[in-house]
Image (cartoon, rainbow, N blue to C red; front, side, top):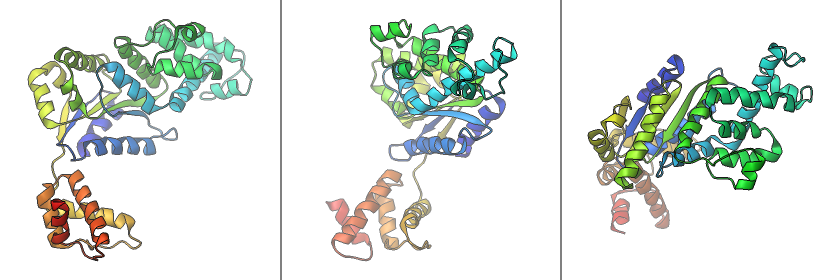
Length: 351
C-alpha cells in the first residue's frame, strides 16, 4: 500500500503520470487490492473533496484496447459522465458570460445551475461547447456524443456510443455521429475523456486493470497490438494518468523479457507475497472480530494447532486460508463441536 500510495500521490501532486504493476500468485489478493484502491478513492475523493480523482476498474483486459476502454467507462458510470457533461457545458456558459457573448452574469461553478433554472437557454451554449471541445480534442463524434449526454432524449444512445457499444445508423444520424467507436479510435476517445477531466479540475485519472495475465491467451499479433495500444496511451498521456495493473508473476516476467518497450514504461513493481503464520493469525482474528458482538484477542473457536495446519496446507495463500476457515466453521457446526481442531481440518482435506 505504501508503494501504491507513492505512485498515486506523485501523480496527484506533480501532475506527472506514474504507473505500477502488482504481481502475485493466484489467491494472494491482487484483485482485492485493486478493489480496495477503487473503494478508498471513491470514498475519500468524491465531489466534495478538494482533490478530484476519476477511477475505473477493468476486471480483465479483453482482446483489444476497446475492451479496456468500454469496461473502464461502464465502471466510471453513466451518472458520473452525464454530470461531467453538464458541468462542462456550465463551464462553457461561464466562459461565454465572461467574454460578453452571453449577457447574463454567471458565477464560476454555477453555469449548469443557471441553465437548469431556465435563466440561460442550453441551445445558446451547446454550439459553442461543441466547437470549443472539438478544437481541443479533434474528435467531433466523441465531442457530439459527450455534449448530447446533457439532453435527456439523447443521453442513452450517446452513452452507448461513448462506451463503444455501437449505435445503429439511424440513431447515429439523429445525433450527427459518423462511425461507431472501434479499436483504433477508442485510444483517441480515452484521450479526449482525460482532457475533459483535466479541464474540469481532476488531478488524476486512475485506470485499474485486473487479470492482466489474460493477454497470454491471445494470439501473438493480438497480444503485441494490445501491449502497443497501452504503451501508446502511456506515451501520449504524460500527465494526470496512473495505470495500475495486476498480473501473475510468470506472465509479467515473460512480458519483461519479450516486450521491453512496454515493460519499461511501467515505472514500479510490487509483489504480493504469501502470508506468514503471524499474518495468518492476524487475518483470522480480523475476520472473527468483524462478526463478534464484543471484539477480543482470542482466535477461538480455532485452536493453535488448527491454525498451524491451515498455514501448512494453504502455504500462506489468502484465498485458500479463507476457504479453509469457512469450511472448518461449517464442519464444526455440523458435528456440534465448539472448537476447530486439526481433526476437523484433516476431515476437510480428506473430503
